[in-house]
Length: 108
Image (tube, rainbow, N blue to C red; front, top):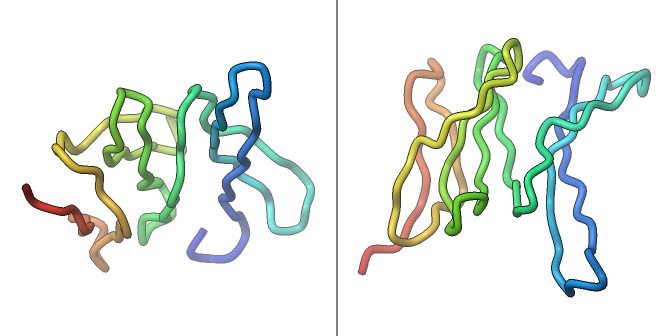
């Protein structure tokens, strides 16, 4: 979180019988007092970025088949896909005021 009280991290696990990996986002208090699993999709949820106000997370995920950008509201737990790109986004970033996002994506 921008104030340093909480951190978001990615945990990658292996499903050995299916020979696949999944990544999910976790939220932890900086003092180590608690961990909360934020996402549980059988997907690759990665590249989390705090919004400037600390109320939302921007991240990439392939939960709908191909990598896209998602926003998760921490107060409600609601998640919304915000892109529909042919090629996946990378390096997501919030604008300083939290009203826009930027990312890199190849063009055909």
